[in-house]
Amino acid sequence: MQLDRIEHIGIAVKSLEEAIPFYENVLGLTCYRVEEVEDQMVKTAFFKVGETKIELLESTSDDGPIAKHIEKRGEGIHHLAFHVQGINKSLAEAEEKGVRLIDKQSRKGAEGLDIGFLHPKSTQGVLMEFCEDNQNQ
Ligand code: ZN
Image (cartoon, rainbow, N blue to C red; front, side, top):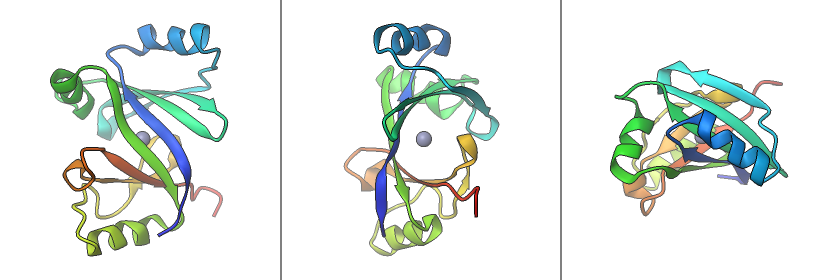
């Protein structure tokens, strides 16, 4: 597989409204997009730092994965996303190499990216996401 770059870092927050001012007023970044991803029960806010994005994640439901993450571990880094060439091929290759997958096939995530998650039990505790921008193909 071929990873190009760290596409984004996902950070679980209790409230976008409370978190966004830190990124804007202290770090001097600009929130360029807020988007709800219904099937993941999250509202996301995006910032760019060079080629890498920061994705803040607020749960829209008490049962959502982000709500559960915050309940167990508090706010903080939630996942690391790599941009890959050929997402489904890359997921299949990881599985062939014994990695447990959360998504065997890519699905649509925020910003129209195709995304798929590897299970943190197979990745030393880091929830990893592969993503690929196929919108212009
Ligand atoms: Zn992500």
